[in-house]
Image (cartoon, rainbow, N blue to C red; front, side, top):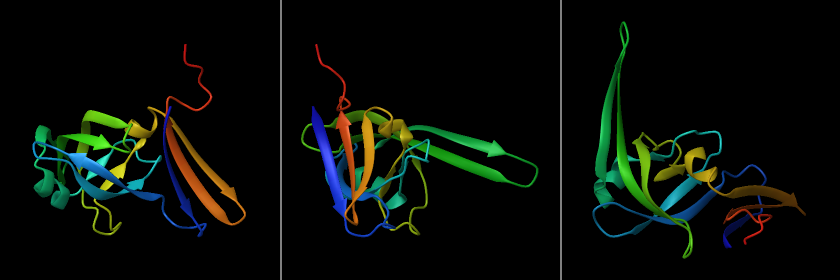
Length: 137
């Protein structure tokens, strides 16, 4: 069983941690926001420039007056020494307002057990694989 656990003393603080990501170059540590409401994991242009991941696809959506381009990149994500995902699809996004390098979305979070606990004015969030209550045969 593998865990990542982070503690906060503020109730309204975003769920953030430092993790390692990599592309064609070596792994590097970046600041991540954990967002279970985001269906897709996101990556900033600056992080793309830093790790040089392979581009998986580029999609263009055209409406009457709007053109939206979406770019997807293949990224390796190491959440801890024991939790690593290879070839995860991250969508390029402007994350400057959030002041993070990547967003861990539900596409990754749903692969394990994600818990948020509040006790004695402390907030703890954890992610484990396999889920804590699962029996391993």
